[in-house]
Amino acid sequence: MVAETPTDLRAVEEIARARIDIKAEVEKRIIGQHAVIDQLLTSLFARGHCLFVGVPGLAKTLLISTLAEVLDLSFNRIQFTPDLMPSDITGTDVLEEDHATGRRVFRFIKGPIFANIVLADEINRTPPKTQAALLQAMQEQRVSAGGQTHVLQPPFLVFATQNPIEQEGTYPLPEAQLDRFMFQVDVGYPSADEEFTIVKQQTSAYRPTTKKVLSPERIQYLQELVLRVPVADHVVRYAVALVRATRPQDSGLPFVRENIAFGAGPRASQFLILGAKAKAILEGRPAASIDDVRALAHPTLQHRIITNFHAEAEGVRPRAIIDRLLESVRP
Image (cartoon, rainbow, N blue to C red; front, side):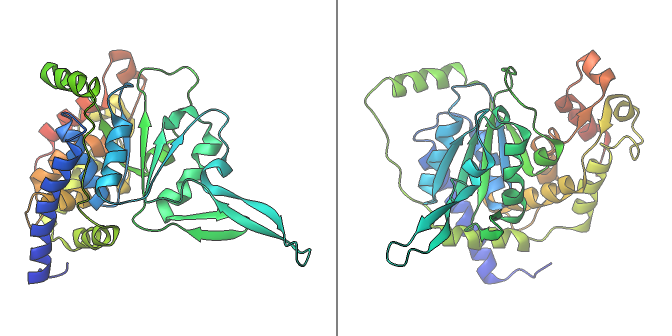
């Protein structure tokens, strides 16, 4: 743990003010979805990738592109389709001839993965081979092609979308790739008042403009600040206990053994703590708490819990299991 310094404390105040400004700019275009925006900002400053699950038309793409614009980050959108190839994401080598010398050389043409924020739209519509092209980039922030390794410019984040109701022509994400996503964020329908405002705004000539709040360099500094946020041992122990309680072989809870085939791995514990640190400083607090961990349990754990046949037959969903875990695992 790095001791708090006056510089760090001023940076905590800066990021708390920036959160307010960022939300104000994003909410010029996005009506409602306050919890979704908060989770998106938490993952961004914790350097975590996000999977957004929601039906079409809920402004998931607009939210992510607006955030990139407000933060002055480069942005690329990849529409995932069944015929998409790995090289369509990472890039490819092309053979070029020097007309002066007649010499032929290969030159790497960068794919859309080379951006600060990459939107993988409808990620489950492409085969596993293509989905796997994202794995190295998400984990190592680099791409290997043609025997060469190309480093992705930080900050680098993948935000993916997935439609939960249309399953025809889709390929379920492998567990190894799901585990790379820090959060699964559920994007729900707007309220009646929010939908009224959305319809009025989108059917008029009004198109709000946004101003830039942070630079890429400042975002990297604040991401480093998250790592220096102190967290007490009892908070870490609670996060670890919560994650271990999802595993049937480690849990002493009967409902876990009855409903879960495989629980969350150690990456979930790490993301709970990183997310708690980011959430704390975004709210202007210099240290993470157990309440921060509990607040992030659902988006961190729900895509990492694999239910068994009994749970599927009884209609028991991971969210309901997490609710019971939060009641049963006490600090």
